[in-house]
Length: 385
Image 1 (cartoon, helix red, strand yellow):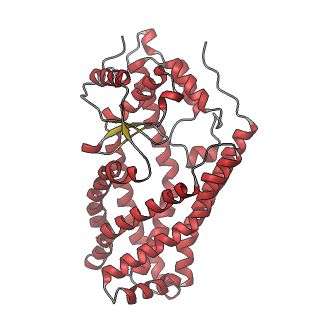
Image 2 (cartoon, rainbow, N blue to C red):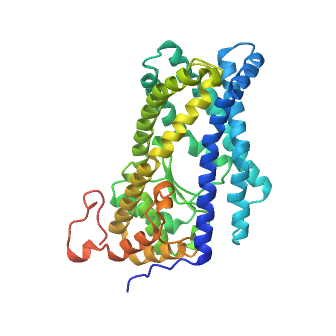
């Protein structure tokens, strides 16, 4: 008998709508802050202060300005983050982190962003001065290796700053994962446990599968095998490298838009902005505004692509393990705290995975091995017996 799609409770719908409203508010604030700094001229004033502190040094002025902007953005976002991560969670009876832990989780990403800014932000600004017409192309090409380096370093140096990860120490589960990987022609896979999500992180030497902390308490053994088989698709098929390709395309498109729209905006409003050159550090909020607006515009398409990747991971896992009912029951359990069906707003702007309802229905129905139909990933991994 197929697993039924749970009907959302009023509390679950209210919880989801509250989070949607807070997310939308955060995005609006993310647009308003750079616009405010630009059209009030305060961004130019901040740049002048940074220039004095840096004694006219271009690099020092840029980094001081960038750090100042990041701090302002963090201060603007912090109340929304606290409402979303603490107040709302507590209101709906969910466990929340102590204030100190929450604050640390806000500060660490800020420090990481500041370090990344210090390492890479000079590249596009220097290229704007050196090659005003082609900087956007050279800048994107220069930052792709930097993005690769960041994605390689995140699992080793950044993620452990806020989350504790430990190697999988369940010999039985480790043997099952090893057997699954062997059927896909893959050797030993680094498996870590920690955090609140099941995912594949890293690139190249740091590529690894991460399973949710306490996964053995909240999932049955068969469900864990189904979860691992889903993540194995991302690992075997190199989905993180596809993500890097998407980042490269977004960098190229975003920089091109900054060049075109940024210069047009400066020509029209340079007196209000307080600068007349895209290479001026005070132009950073203008770049942020354009890139962030561009990201919001392409986000529905990006999420559609991400959902297709995740849907194929569900297919891959089912073909590998046949854990249909276990998967469907797991998704139905998740639907106790969130609506199984997505509304249009969530589907467009938030949903990187198919809805729980779609995943339940797919797990119920997808059984090509029972009818002798060809498996989509039959040539990638040895099918289940």
